[in-house]
Image (cartoon, rainbow, N blue to C red; front, side, top):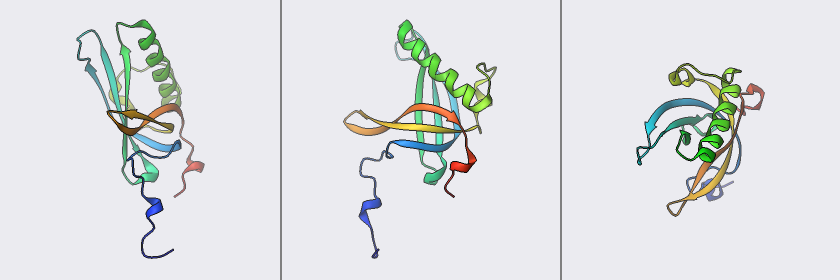
Amino acid sequence: MGFFDGSEIIDSGALPQGDYQAVIVGAEEKENKAGTGSYVRLDYEILEQGGLTVSDFMNLFHDNVKVAGIAKRQFKQLLVATTGEPDLENLEDLIGKKLTLTLGQTEFNGEVVNSVKKHKPFNVSDVPF
């Protein structure tokens, strides 16, 4: 390899699809714009990527039952992966929890961004560093 290898640069700003070790660095509930419910915003620091953050939004309390159902299944998967339990008392208790995220890619406002497809327990043997 020479002085600079441009093949290592991710043009879209999104990570390639796959599994990544992460730690939850932010968790907050916010009211949706319509005022008809709320969502949870989760921020994950991707450990292999030197502080890169990926955000996820779960519409746990939504007037569309199907949307809320999908979010509740995803949130339960997150809880089981991080705490081993399907219930949570305080959202802040998730801060600092480690897990493995399966990331996909999606288009948002004309830009390719990462989306969280699956939450799995943290496996220290998978960490490449």
